[in-house]
Each structure stands twice: as structure tokens, then as C-alpha cells.
Length: 77
Image: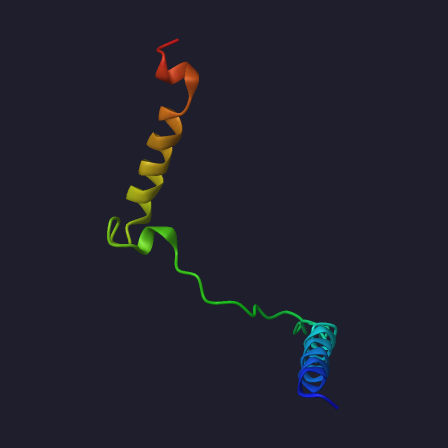
């Protein structure tokens, strides 16, 4: 075999191997444990530095923000 033809065959074999490797995806199945949360533990929104753990102050800030988005309150109607 000529060197050009043998390099072509090697290149063709490599391309075929890469093409077939893309077809080998494994199915990804999640197993759930009944009654348990598998994710990260969440912290309450009022536990950040701005509110310092004061839930009542956080509730009031949320209420004020919601009132600012109320069209009737915003335009004075």
C-alpha cells in the first residue's frame, strides 16, 4: 500500500471511530428516595446580611415592594 493510501485509511478509521463514539450515550436515570429531599439545604430569605434574621422586617419590606408595584397605589387613585 502506498503511504498516501495508508494515511487515508488511518484517517478514515479515526473519523469512523469518533463518529461511532457519539452514538454511545448512556441513559441518565435519576433514582429518588421516597420522602427525602435530595437537593441542597435552603436558607430562609430573611437570614441574609440585609435583614439579619429579622423575618418581620423582611415581611414588611416585601409588603412595601408589592405596594409600590400596585398601580392604584402608585398613581394615587
